[in-house]
Image (cartoon, rainbow, N blue to C red; front, side, top):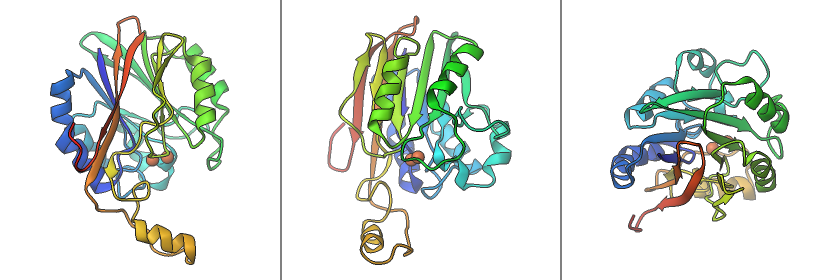
Length: 262
Ligand SMILES: [Fe+2]
Ligand SMILES: [Fe+2]
């Protein structure tokens, strides 16, 4: 089973990158299932229902989000009726949406889950990530293949979490920082890991935003305008090779950027 996991899709350029690169990647790597973190797909903040539908139409099978889940009020209503969308599992009870879902791919069940970190992250009332993951593994129906999006700022928090659950799941993939790390590995000879998959969106940017505006805000005007950058896109993802028992045999980084062949 070849699984592609796309890092945070950001704004218009991110959506265009998915549209332009995903079909050829699917063909080249014979990809069976695509997961995409799309928490920044709508102007860098959140995911609107039209953009959810747009990204699904480009071939993303399962969509995760993260802290930007909270930036769009309409999320609360439409997340209830979007069967391919996974919000963080460890949110307070009563939050709309579902944090772990099972997808059927050619007769094989794949679970996709999302966990929102706590270190250096805004407090949304998210539960301790270990308590939440223990609860998830205990309560939810077990599948051999299980992909976890660990959404957070601190690499150490993500690495420790991954070591703790490496024998339980097929992959633990970091998102949120928007910068692809080069530490892809297979933990416990079973679980694919990377601290951050990286961002799919404008390449010449500060993690997606307009460079000049970020500098002005940092120097002198913290409340100055901040827009999405419209530079040419980059596409960041990892490719996983997972067997039917749920063991990950290979994790490979994909980093497409302007001027670089892929
Ligand atoms: Fe993000
Ligand atoms: Fe985030």
